[in-house]
Length: 88
Length: 392
Image (tube, chains in turn green, yellow):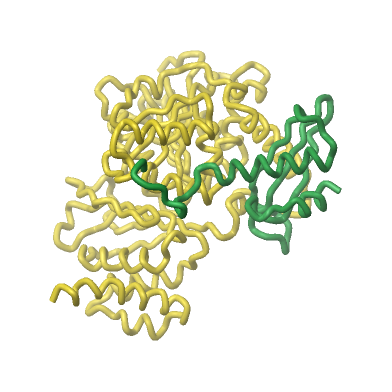
């Protein structure tokens, strides 16, 4: 592990980093304060015609029920545009 | 059997092939360990894992209808109630602790929600009126140092398993070329720490079982913002699903996506071990990372009274373990496959062609199989035969 750096080696934080990126997009698009909890998870989609996996975003604003948004893409495929479409 | 009022429940998670059954066996074989009931949850239609765990005085409850995380959360409460009823009726040994060995694809969130204080308002899960109260007393997650990074990169379940843990046990450190010393373990710990800031990270070779399965406070708020958010999202999605009239499909069929599936091969007649290993090598070379897991028990033609336990995880095949005797009355070969995007039929046909017939009929299989799979197999055969030509 310490002998050389393999650029093709799996990245521990790939999904974690992608999750952080999506959260930042959601906060920006919904104009949320930085301390508003936003959660991102990959789940299977139950809807016919949708991809097997979808990304589900939850916004937990104080005093409000959790708001959920679905992006019909795997987490690594999610783009800012797809988030904008989901939350728009 | 008199039950204590409160019984601790521990979740044992870890991605496919990370060594959960091996660790559980080592724990249960500790002479100091008693009064433990085990719930084994397998993602597969032919249960195998329960054969790999020592029975003895231990009460084993086997749940193989998909994942507990995919079932309604009442399943875990019903399972706990059933365990207690069987013990009270004298059918099984009593217990004062429960370990739930989750499926390698298991998402801890539904089970943590089911065992959380908010579920009953009293702080514990309560089943029937005379039942003891069960509470979540710890989440132990195994991280396989050989395949774990790949699992974390490609499977969101693996990331959640690490994040929910209050104890992370790094397994296969004895065979990993990636770890050459304490410095490397420290680097690995730093990378895991980025995914879970609070868990104890322990080398499997140095683990004290007492620290893994002794009750301690498990508070989800200590696990970080992601865990709290996932639990809230899980509860919201479950509520939404409860009001969803569009689908009558059980959620368990789809939580992991249609690409991930499990299937089994059962063979009545004892097998040639050499042919079986050839089958496994062909399958691994052709399927690559799409073959997530193979596990099973093999009836060997040469030593039919001493079955072989086989394990393979993605690219890694563990040395088969020979048992001194069959663990139950079923003497058939039973293999379970967990795959991502591989249909069962070509695998079954390959098994029949390579293992189950005499003489070997690989040519007939290749004529019958689809062109894409044949291409993969032919490349694998080519790869397999090249070294032997070189050595001639």
